Length: 237
Image (cartoon, rainbow, N blue to C red; front, side, top):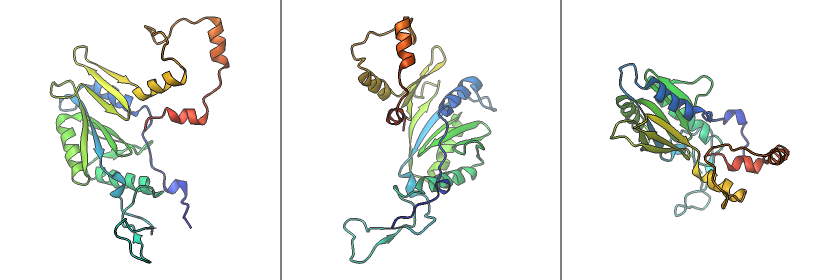
């Protein structure tokens, strides 16, 4: 018999969709921190994140293949992917570790965090942080003390930074000459929409919106809202 947990007890916050745009805007608007050091963006990915949380309830599972013994099972000491409260416990684990680093969690969304000169977010096991080079490296080192992780992107105007990185399927690109940042939607969504609406042979438009006639306007207004399956298809993981 499986135990069903209260959804409120296993809730894990996710940053709002605007969070990446806000971090880009912060980097572009502020440009430098309180020490007048240029702001850059770093993306860090924690490996096997759900295995770091300590189990808060008694959960038993089959013994791993090759270690089976008749009549025996395993008691989880840490959370595991597939257990209902794994994401919630992982949130508690990483947030407590960041608090030790002097970071404050967001009130509206605990998936957002900040300290002087540093702004960031956590989406599952991915951390996106905007700060100076010195503060980014310090944040990265603090995470490494508790978790196995890797750096997947380092964006900035300095020549030794990347000019294009990927965050949650979205592409962030820097134009060093014009000093602008471009945010491109998930390329997979373009391919999916092109296939879904049969636009493989459609003519390209020079602008996002072109003039349409009354017949096309009526057709668009009469179109049905997206169904539940169609809505979730275009969510970036």
